[in-house]
Image (cartoon, rainbow, N blue to C red):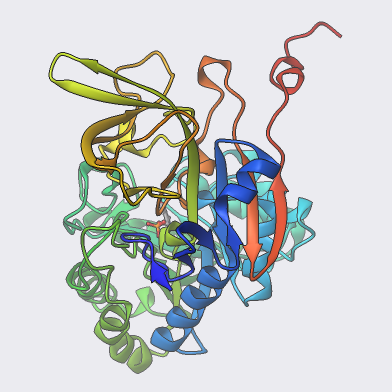
Length: 422
Ligand SMILES: Cc1ncc(COP(=O)(O)O)c(C=O)c1O
């Protein structure tokens, strides 16, 4: 059984000349559910959760970052594996409700929380809020007073640490909008401590996404502990350290982040202080667990480029256009006799930035052939849009030989329904 090169998961593998997800061949899924199609492997998600548990220990609190892929069925799978949730909007909280999942093990971050979101999350009894801005404090305190119970908060610090990642997904530098700069944080801790309706239970950092080394996590913790140690009130009642998400995956090029190294870099200090680690991975759990299958429409040569036109586009997978992200792309059923050609894999959307991959060496394809864009399970379907009035792809979850459609392809009527006069 050969693993698909670059997939990052042994559960996407070649069998009988066809790419399979676990026990199911991808062409059969496209026949049943159409193209383009997101396909997820449940086994991969299970293995990733187990790896994080082994690294961080049973006491660690694992909160899946819902934004990475908010599909209700995937949320249920992650809940069944013992995860709580990292929320960044009232809408994500509504998703937990829609999936009939408990909210008590969720944390809520977000640089611009709205009053209704704060009220809804307080009413839902989430574990704690990650406070990022002073404007939240009176809103949180008022919600606590109304409910007759102090609201638990962790302060999101911006430690000004360079995570060494793409500028658009870096969040822990002082020029980023996220968190509270350490030199301003003392006054906010004082305000929290002074308010009877707020309880300081922890500190939070999230440095960015797709981190490749443990060093930024260690540097951030060092800055947080230096801040806390300046004043005993900053440590009083504190029991959580939320080190954020950002655990990088390979995308067919590099090694994924060594999560054991991250755990080893922070655990001794957290244990010495009696702080429970909270982690908020999104990409690490779902990225390698999903692929986007697309169908070749045709080919055309223009100038020096050779374009392979496919039926998936930037509206289905925005990451290449948004961050110049590179996803491995492979043929689903590579023909042994096909020579390799260098192509730009592009979609039908009317934007030059609409590409899935540029300068890729792929076996020469014919119309109707299938390609798989790998490592697309995180920030793929969740960032998809209806641009060019395109229906977002269907999504299926494979578990061994079992296949479950977890999202239907949209109908055109659904796209227009809010525009039609009542
Ligand atoms: C506060 C917070 N936590 C966790 C995450 C998840 O990041 P990743 O998917 O890289 O693990 C994000 C992503 O933007 C975030 O903003």
